[in-house]
Image (cartoon, rainbow, N blue to C red; front, side, top):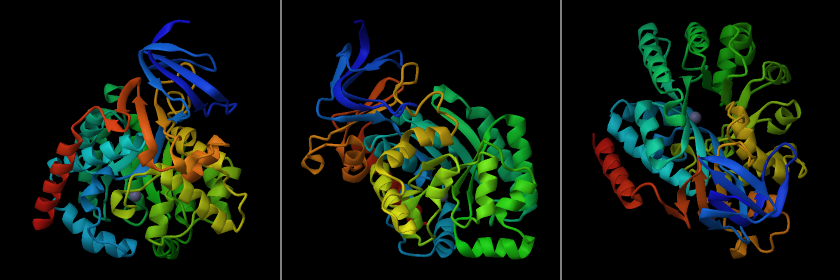
Length: 431
Ligand SMILES: [Zn+2]
């Protein structure tokens, strides 16, 4: 057999392809950033990773976060969302400088890379800094400038201009970055603003990433004001298409779910953030039955507080079982699918990433299941979903490049990233 640039040898390979093939043992051959072989034959490479007794999965996709909010980690805790945002987060965000965002995002990207996240969907400010930090660390980003219009036309106009200019400039950047428009939420943007966002997204050919129906009170207020739910009103405006991803999607009725399914809208499920802020429990199991594309997200480090999607998969499935009082709901295999292939589909990237198949870009994670907490690894899906944590990630490959090897970040100096974050936090909160 041909010698590949990179060979990952003798692991338990969960492909997450259409047939959900598992190779045990399995090997992968990668050249020029592309998967050229996956199967049970042994392969050789210029560079080789020994994956024996390890589980190999496609790179994890973090479907909703605000990476730079490492700056707000462990700052103000145990508060309701509205109070947390309005009294603590937004006033400090007024003082944010581009460099803070870059430093905060670098730390988040390093943390995500070390935990096996190879692609993240992010909404924040100074997104050019976010794009550059992601590329420096070596992970992919689907990025949008967060646009908080606040029912102020002038503010909205400026925000949209920034959002559009970022989306135009960075879409497809270095083959690692894709862009979207990011109106913040139904309670922080007017309908007129959202209509303009839809028009601009159509004009640019980019998607939309919005928080929707996250907490109860704003949805009730919206219904009081407009007579119908946010999903119904936005649907009447023609806002929903398959390029829209809504984060949270908790306060939805049956008709709302039907609309999301018919319009092929994607959902980001954020179980830890939803539990921590006591926002509620999304109807994920029903969404999946309706064929809605669902990915899983950490949400920002201010409301999680870690960026450890492997742990969140477990919490996400436990929360669904509890919601429906049914242990068969969201089984391990489906939960892991959501964090890999499902996330790629939710972001319309499954033609490139999300599974280990010949022809796909090589985004691959090797998890060290030789550790005691996994033994015995009988069903590799349950081993990963129920036993794992990001700290068990051994090797991470993005676009064919090894960015984490034996648990060590290869692309940047982690110590420097940590120091820069601590200095930035000190400066930001001193103001
Ligand atoms: Zn969020």
